[in-house]
Image (cartoon, rainbow, N blue to C red):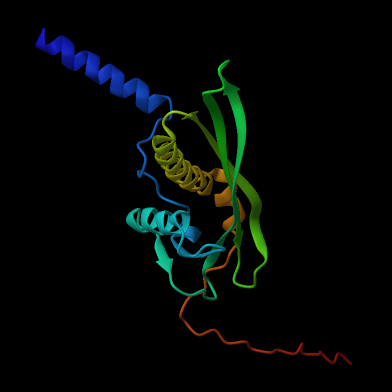
Length: 192
Protein backbone atom coordinates (compact mmCIF):
# COMPACT_ATOMS: atom_id res chain seq x y z
CA UNK A 1 0.00 0.00 0.00
CA UNK A 2 2.85 2.37 0.87
CA UNK A 3 4.50 1.84 -2.52
CA UNK A 4 1.22 2.51 -4.27
CA UNK A 5 1.05 6.02 -2.74
CA UNK A 6 4.58 6.80 -3.95
CA UNK A 7 3.75 5.44 -7.38
CA UNK A 8 0.66 7.65 -7.62
CA UNK A 9 2.61 10.67 -6.39
CA UNK A 10 5.35 9.98 -8.94
CA UNK A 11 2.79 9.76 -11.76
CA UNK A 12 1.11 12.97 -10.64
CA UNK A 13 4.41 14.87 -10.59
CA UNK A 14 5.39 13.36 -13.95
CA UNK A 15 2.14 14.41 -15.63
CA UNK A 16 2.15 17.90 -14.13
CA UNK A 17 5.73 18.46 -15.28
CA UNK A 18 4.91 17.04 -18.70
CA UNK A 19 2.03 19.44 -19.34
CA UNK A 20 4.28 22.49 -18.90
CA UNK A 21 3.11 23.48 -15.41
CA UNK A 22 5.66 25.54 -13.48
CA UNK A 23 5.45 26.89 -9.95
CA UNK A 24 5.24 30.66 -9.75
CA UNK A 25 8.63 32.15 -9.08
CA UNK A 26 10.47 29.37 -10.93
CA UNK A 27 11.65 31.16 -14.04
CA UNK A 28 14.77 32.57 -15.59
CA UNK A 29 14.48 35.41 -18.06
CA UNK A 30 16.48 35.43 -21.32
CA UNK A 31 20.17 36.35 -20.91
CA UNK A 32 19.76 39.91 -22.21
CA UNK A 33 17.05 40.51 -19.58
CA UNK A 34 19.18 39.40 -16.64
CA UNK A 35 19.99 43.07 -16.13
CA UNK A 36 16.92 45.29 -16.44
CA UNK A 37 15.87 48.87 -15.78
CA UNK A 38 12.16 49.35 -15.00
CA UNK A 39 10.33 52.59 -15.62
CA UNK A 40 6.68 53.19 -14.87
CA UNK A 41 4.06 55.93 -14.81
CA UNK A 42 3.58 54.81 -11.19
CA UNK A 43 7.16 54.17 -9.97
CA UNK A 44 6.19 53.54 -6.33
CA UNK A 45 2.88 51.82 -7.05
CA UNK A 46 2.18 48.20 -6.13
CA UNK A 47 2.69 46.85 -9.66
CA UNK A 48 6.16 48.36 -10.04
CA UNK A 49 7.21 47.39 -6.52
CA UNK A 50 6.01 43.77 -6.98
CA UNK A 51 7.66 43.55 -10.40
CA UNK A 52 11.02 44.70 -9.01
CA UNK A 53 10.78 42.36 -6.02
CA UNK A 54 9.83 39.26 -8.00
CA UNK A 55 12.40 39.84 -10.73
CA UNK A 56 15.07 40.59 -8.12
CA UNK A 57 14.31 37.36 -6.24
CA UNK A 58 14.52 35.40 -9.49
CA UNK A 59 18.11 36.49 -10.13
CA UNK A 60 17.46 39.42 -12.46
CA UNK A 61 19.53 42.46 -11.56
CA UNK A 62 17.06 45.36 -11.43
CA UNK A 63 19.02 48.55 -12.02
CA UNK A 64 18.34 51.98 -10.48
CA UNK A 65 19.49 53.82 -13.62
CA UNK A 66 19.40 53.05 -17.33
CA UNK A 67 22.69 52.13 -18.94
CA UNK A 68 24.21 51.59 -22.38
CA UNK A 69 23.69 47.80 -22.38
CA UNK A 70 20.64 47.64 -20.14
CA UNK A 71 17.22 46.96 -21.58
CA UNK A 72 14.40 49.09 -20.20
CA UNK A 73 11.02 47.63 -19.30
CA UNK A 74 8.53 50.48 -19.61
CA UNK A 75 5.22 49.85 -17.82
CA UNK A 76 2.50 52.38 -18.63
CA UNK A 77 -1.19 53.09 -18.67
CA UNK A 78 -2.31 51.03 -15.67
CA UNK A 79 -6.10 51.20 -15.65
CA UNK A 80 -9.23 49.72 -14.14
CA UNK A 81 -12.61 49.29 -15.76
CA UNK A 82 -15.77 48.01 -14.10
CA UNK A 83 -18.95 46.58 -15.60
CA UNK A 84 -22.11 45.19 -14.05
CA UNK A 85 -22.13 41.42 -14.31
CA UNK A 86 -25.57 40.72 -12.82
CA UNK A 87 -28.14 42.18 -10.50
CA UNK A 88 -30.60 40.42 -8.23
CA UNK A 89 -34.35 40.89 -8.75
CA UNK A 90 -34.64 42.87 -5.53
CA UNK A 91 -31.66 45.08 -6.58
CA UNK A 92 -30.02 44.44 -3.19
CA UNK A 93 -27.15 42.42 -4.63
CA UNK A 94 -25.11 43.37 -7.68
CA UNK A 95 -22.15 41.49 -9.15
CA UNK A 96 -19.45 43.45 -10.91
CA UNK A 97 -16.57 42.46 -13.15
CA UNK A 98 -13.43 44.46 -12.49
CA UNK A 99 -10.80 44.63 -15.25
CA UNK A 100 -7.18 45.67 -14.77
CA UNK A 101 -4.88 46.33 -17.72
CA UNK A 102 -1.41 47.70 -18.28
CA UNK A 103 0.80 48.28 -21.29
CA UNK A 104 4.48 47.44 -21.47
CA UNK A 105 7.36 47.70 -23.89
CA UNK A 106 10.99 46.61 -23.92
CA UNK A 107 13.34 49.33 -25.16
CA UNK A 108 17.03 49.61 -25.87
CA UNK A 109 19.15 52.34 -24.27
CA UNK A 110 18.06 54.83 -26.97
CA UNK A 111 14.36 54.31 -26.26
CA UNK A 112 13.74 52.29 -29.41
CA UNK A 113 11.19 49.52 -28.98
CA UNK A 114 12.62 46.01 -29.12
CA UNK A 115 9.36 44.31 -28.17
CA UNK A 116 5.89 45.70 -27.82
CA UNK A 117 3.93 47.65 -26.95
CA UNK A 118 1.87 44.81 -25.50
CA UNK A 119 -1.07 44.76 -23.11
CA UNK A 120 -1.65 42.55 -20.08
CA UNK A 121 -5.29 42.25 -18.99
CA UNK A 122 -6.86 40.39 -16.06
CA UNK A 123 -10.34 40.36 -14.57
CA UNK A 124 -12.25 39.27 -11.50
CA UNK A 125 -15.75 39.43 -10.06
CA UNK A 126 -17.06 40.76 -6.77
CA UNK A 127 -20.48 41.19 -5.20
CA UNK A 128 -21.98 44.31 -3.67
CA UNK A 129 -24.66 43.72 -1.07
CA UNK A 130 -26.59 46.88 -0.21
CA UNK A 131 -26.97 45.62 3.37
CA UNK A 132 -23.19 45.20 3.89
CA UNK A 133 -21.53 48.19 2.24
CA UNK A 134 -18.41 48.12 4.47
CA UNK A 135 -17.44 44.57 3.48
CA UNK A 136 -17.95 45.48 -0.17
CA UNK A 137 -15.20 48.10 0.00
CA UNK A 138 -12.78 45.59 1.50
CA UNK A 139 -13.76 43.00 -1.09
CA UNK A 140 -13.10 45.42 -3.96
CA UNK A 141 -9.73 46.49 -2.50
CA UNK A 142 -8.71 42.85 -2.10
CA UNK A 143 -9.72 42.12 -5.69
CA UNK A 144 -7.75 45.12 -6.96
CA UNK A 145 -4.61 43.86 -5.18
CA UNK A 146 -5.13 40.35 -6.54
CA UNK A 147 -5.61 41.64 -10.10
CA UNK A 148 -2.40 43.67 -9.85
CA UNK A 149 -0.52 40.58 -8.64
CA UNK A 150 -1.97 38.47 -11.46
CA UNK A 151 -0.98 41.11 -14.02
CA UNK A 152 2.60 41.15 -12.69
CA UNK A 153 2.90 37.37 -13.03
CA UNK A 154 1.32 37.45 -16.48
CA UNK A 155 3.81 40.14 -17.54
CA UNK A 156 6.73 38.08 -16.23
CA UNK A 157 5.45 35.00 -18.07
CA UNK A 158 5.35 37.03 -21.28
CA UNK A 159 8.90 38.28 -20.68
CA UNK A 160 9.93 34.64 -20.44
CA UNK A 161 8.44 33.79 -23.85
CA UNK A 162 10.45 32.72 -26.92
CA UNK A 163 9.22 35.82 -28.81
CA UNK A 164 10.79 38.13 -26.22
CA UNK A 165 14.01 36.08 -26.17
CA UNK A 166 14.23 36.44 -29.95
CA UNK A 167 13.48 40.19 -29.86
CA UNK A 168 16.13 41.01 -27.24
CA UNK A 169 18.72 38.57 -28.59
CA UNK A 170 19.95 41.22 -31.02
CA UNK A 171 20.96 43.67 -28.28
CA UNK A 172 24.78 43.66 -28.29
CA UNK A 173 26.72 43.03 -25.12
CA UNK A 174 30.09 44.72 -25.38
CA UNK A 175 33.21 43.49 -23.71
CA UNK A 176 35.55 45.56 -21.60
CA UNK A 177 38.48 44.82 -23.85
CA UNK A 178 39.59 47.80 -25.89
CA UNK A 179 39.18 47.50 -29.60
CA UNK A 180 41.22 49.38 -32.12
CA UNK A 181 40.48 50.31 -35.66
CA UNK A 182 43.25 49.98 -38.17
CA UNK A 183 42.83 51.86 -41.40
CA UNK A 184 44.46 50.16 -44.33
CA UNK A 185 44.85 51.33 -47.86
CA UNK A 186 45.09 48.93 -50.73
CA UNK A 187 48.52 48.56 -52.28
CA UNK A 188 48.73 49.16 -55.96
CA UNK A 189 50.99 46.97 -57.99
CA UNK A 190 52.95 48.40 -60.81
CA UNK A 191 53.45 45.88 -63.52
CA UNK A 192 55.51 47.17 -66.43
